[in-house]
Amino acid sequence: MGNEDLLRRHAAGAGGRAARSAAGAPGRPTLRTVVVTCMDARIDVYTLFGLAPGEAHVLRNAGGIVTDDVVRSIAISQRKLGTTDVLLVHHSGCGMATFTDEEFSDELAAETGTRPPWRPGAFRDAADDVRRGVARLRGEPFLRDGTPIRGFVVDITTFALEEISPAVEAG
Ligand SMILES: [Zn+2]
Image (cartoon, rainbow, N blue to C red):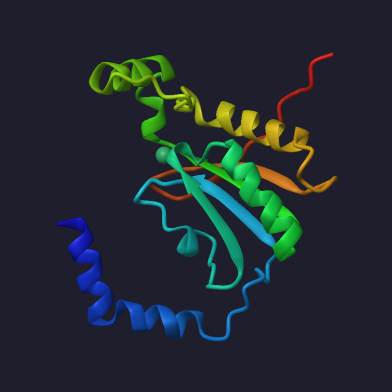
């Protein structure tokens, strides 16, 4: 199934097309930005933002949530590969809104006998989680001071972007 299909497509020409597409592209992203988004299979990040190989770093995980590993990758992207900006993009209809952290951890514990040491990162409201993610990034000591960070929710049907205004600081 899946793996074999990919390898067949690679051999049948996809690998060569990737090489031609990336030909001459530098390793340092020319647009100097990092896009963090969900692994949702419907989101073609390159098409969504008109990106070409060599232009941006794209970090994806379940939900597009800001995890320790996302912070790790952004720190390396900024310090070693010269990026300056971060775009955080969640989407409507995200699977992460269909369960809770407790439910998923319970499910894994019941089936495997081990509770995951990590937080699954479920959320009810994509915009709220974008606000949370942006706030976390703003507070991260490992990102460069004053890093421009913008947060959005993309509509999974129209692919329109809604910008999410930052959380109002308490106090
Ligand atoms: Zn998603």
